[in-house]
Image (tube, rainbow, N blue to C red; front, side):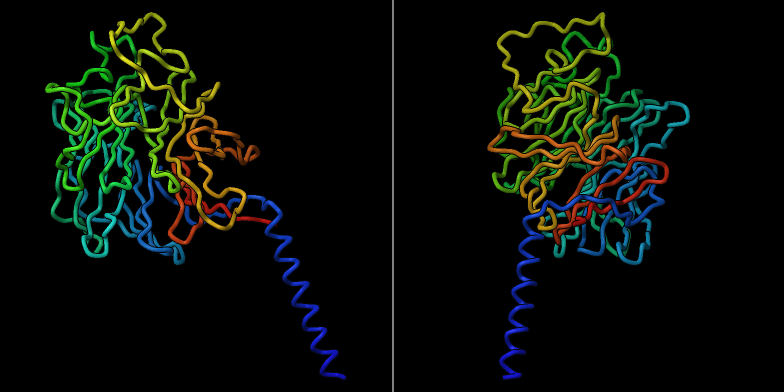
Length: 386
């Protein structure tokens, strides 16, 4: 009899435990912020080597290897010597520095690291540059230039620099148009000029060569061109369920957007925008026979969207396959529920704790992280609280 009673009691506890676990799964957890690491100098991007190790690019600092458990930071040596020196103290809006960092899909055997950054050339100014190099013992070797978005200019803005590996094994890169004022546009706007490398999105092979199935823009188009009409796109990400590529775009006075990337598409800048132009006296030239691709979402206020990501983890079941978009100007973090290419609902998170956020990224084990853009930049994990 005692054994029977004990068995029934154990069965009861097991049922209660299962019931509590089921109830927890049905409750939407509250997202909270947990600081993993601070002391970062305006961090821009993170690439996970494992669940515990990552590379972090500092826009105003270095490329780092960090340990998420011990909090150790190691500077990666051998970064290209033509990296710009930040002059933020002189030009407050200076956007130069190190941008995206990615590791090769076959990093364990290939050891390639891909980096975008603002490069300088004496007497000419700066431009966006994409390189790859082998990483061995915290040092970079065998540098290869993949994209050099000439011309070099003395503008300090809108480099772009977002990168992602597509499901087709190609590298997609965003290059900004670099201008601050629209009144400085040439007769043919930079982002609309097929012969100008700026204001475009590129699709290249991992060695920098051009895929034969890229869209054909004509004999005068710059090599690797995939889409045009880009002002200042930073975030670019693959949607896991569909393989579609989504990217964020900075407007001027409002006009911040989320777009879906299509081969050969023209996203309109500066001829069309969901906001206003900064130069009220500028009128873009009329372009004949051009079809512009509208955004799938735009904000009515300035949000400055940055490095977005799709969430596929298990800690927030209700967020499964949602798009997470961080921002700078209002220090916001947004969650979008998507069906096909339509945004069905939007939620803004952490309304009571706004910080400038440069990147949202999911680790290999499904944890969600953000990087804050400040002198004492932080790597923060978004954790569930029930």
